[in-house]
Image 1 (cartoon, chains in turn purple, brown):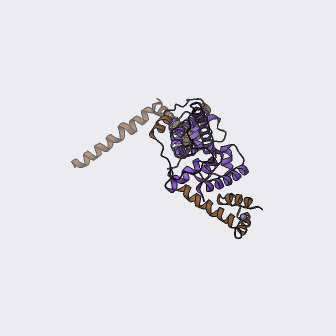
Image 2 (cartoon, chains in turn cyan, yellow):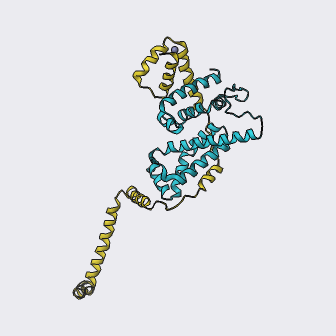
Length: 178
Length: 148
Ligand SMILES: [Zn+2]
């Protein structure tokens, strides 16, 4: 059976077809949720970010100028939602005057006690990277996106993405003690 | 080129963002540079480690939330019509105008047949010959042969 393209499904969503909307959600939920989860370091925030992204898709499907690049559009919206939710969360933490060590604190040495096996260790190290490093590395390593696509998602340029990914790798190696 | 520039190039190379011919200069450099060689090994090793991170599963709660989103319906009639047309083309493998023309032809033939059938000038002739005349002849002939 022929798999409908993003373009065709988006066209159906524009016409109010809920099944096409569900098909697009099923297609992208896992990679988007994983990306938001790793970007925010929080499953609940990731859920909110993915939900908001699809809410935006439902409301502004007509405004997507390039339906062929829906994947990039979804990742850009999910990334922006994740960062906004994270900022709001940090404000709440500050208002509450708590002393919680948020996982995106920069230059925090990797605590090996909290990261016993290899996968947990690198996941933890990724969370300790600067957001601007973490997001590009996640998009490159997990989504296999090109520098041009990552630039579109993060509102940057391919040459800046190239430089940022390099710095991200240097920083990650340092946090892992490699 | 400095070691930092070489390493940035190596980083782009493992991301398939550097043409092979350009990569040649990096490899001639790392043959003599311990630091840059180490960066390449570390980057490849980290990629392997990242690949082993398990994917977080989507919860049924998120599914329920997203699938409950109501779409604003019927906001683009023109586009919806074009979509119906494209779906016809995809599922039947026949363009919509051809399907419409076919249906029109069938309806037209039916109308013409009906008109011919009900036409007073032709009806008696057809009635006698094809409906009442022929079967009766055959039936009598068969019965007669059996009787003999
Ligand atoms: Zn070097």
